[in-house]
Image (cartoon, rainbow over all chains, first blue to last red):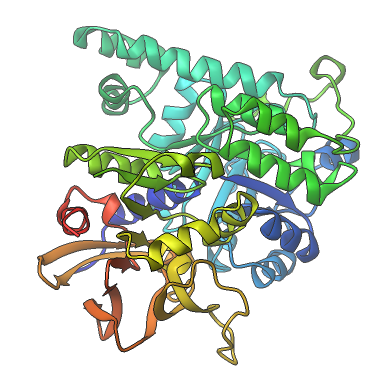
Length: 294
Length: 193
């Protein structure tokens, strides 16, 4: 029996289900990838520069060198993700050609298209996309994303944006759940999303795909905060390998995501972690990556 | 009879939903202290076996669980759960087919190959017959496969000659994810042990 696009989409959503309760870590070298896997990362994001360095370097930021990504694929047995620019479907084709496990169509890189996102339904490989609100999340799912993450504000070490995005998405979903059936049409129009996806949220009170937190998570307490706010797992970008003791911090964040409702445990793993990444306040930065791709 | 579901990482909520559908009581096992709660059965869910193995060790749960499984407590391991149970583990693409020095629970007398079909693009779904149940839907996500079994192991399902489900005493393990389907037969079989 030939596999349909729908079958593939389902398998791709299911891989995200297997990542739940886990931490996905940004890594730039095979050595970092091995440290992340050993510390308990459920997947790694292979990229040449972590968001904090992209921010510092400025200029145009693109998909990583495929050879660098392959090096990381060979170093670890857990899933390997990589980023392409928003709308850059050829970068996505390249990542699919090297057998990547997940593509992040990411606002962290410079957008390649200021109107259109990638038509992700035409790919066999799964995509994760960022969202700040329910409208963005459901539009990305309509385009074929099989996993959502908050945008947060990458490379800042400041969790405030991830918190506000997670609260907004979940708050909007609670409001949709409380609506009458005949109010959904107007809400779909207001949010600019397909009615069938909105009906799913109305009936189930959740997105039809897994939703992780991302963008500014730097400490075990940050990670547990996002989990208590309803995240199903956490991406940590600059927070680990920009800190004083990456190995210990990675393990502490992994533990805190599993035992996110256990303050004594979080206190224990937060002890003597050394220097956290130097944060940048969102009001001090000129480039808000979260405003890319809406 | 209460089932504990290992909830360190992965698709544990999906197993909980299956047990809810069957009206079976259950709770989540997240840390060493949770082991003090009484339970009669154990489910090891899908997810990443490296993460789950790491946390089982960090939480000092590996030894007590192994003792209970060896004493005959029923256990169901799916995908990563199969790898946690296996006595011998081989990494995909390992040219020399060397067995990894480290196993996790190691109570099930099988050799498994991790990520045996490849990366996510090789994930697939199919239907095949399952011993004692009939035809069941099987979903393989970056799945392992069983390449060798010991004398006490009964093979329950095959795909193209590859073993994808086994039973040894009260241990049932599948390379696929019965928790991702509406079909509760495999969970019923487990709850009947």
